[in-house]
Image (cartoon, rainbow, N blue to C red; front, side, top):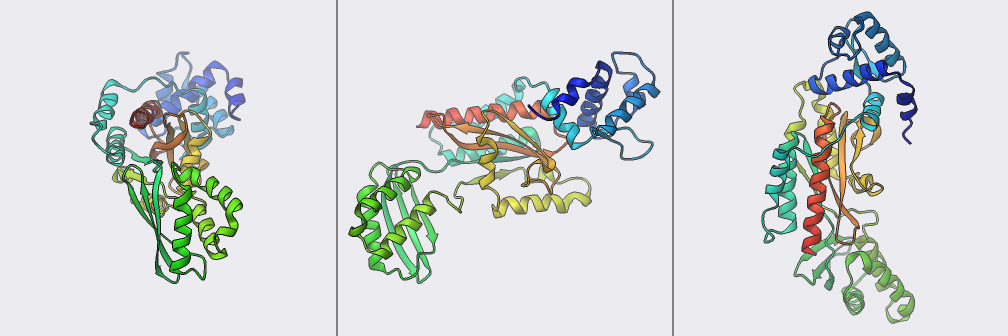
Length: 352
């Protein structure tokens, strides 16, 4: 259970309503909410002074904050987390939002990357935030592998998949490799890769190396082992991250521009992109990360709403998400992200 739940459970009806209305008002307007405003809205008719006392209690609990002595209150990050976990009401996406997402899927003649690119653009347009779409790794069976020596410390691996897809990847080979040893390694792999995907090839290679270690020389073995690590994405991430709607995150105040740029510098360098799928990997549905709760967005003061999508085997293979200010309309954004992830998953499953 979330650690904020006991606090919420201990609130009386008035305190809970004051807290909820402050958060909802702030998410709608972006400005602190004052006691006079609340005195006209509360179910229970109480004085502005009584409401101020309640807000002071909530501030003491770390749930609200006051930017100025005479100003109203706004939620803290802890307050937003408690609201999202305990008070946020999530429904279905609005009809217009759902229609705009549906229209992006086009026809089955479009390739997956093109479709996901369109989905990212639509998600950004619908939410007015920046969208993230983590595309799946190519999981078709491999048909052929070739190693090409480019320089003493640079080589190319050419991967030909059974569906006709071709990928070229640069890597640094182990010291002492020769064109002859590379050919030997490629011949070894081509003899065992029939029907294997990149994900399953590593285990096959490990078994084959153990069973047939005497059939290839030591240098070729090192090359196979290093290649297996590369293909399994150990230490390197080859998923494609699609970012759309970057301009939607640029704030009106120039003071925050550097923080937003820092966020996208991190994204575009992909230093932490491996974490993106992990964020969604341990939950079936939408997850919400507010501000510093996720180190990938801690410098930007942004929130991330992310949901995984699955293939026909119910295996998580990617994710979609929206980044925006912590003052997101969570009640609207969460259903949109969830619906989009489900549509992408169905599209992937249908194609497989």
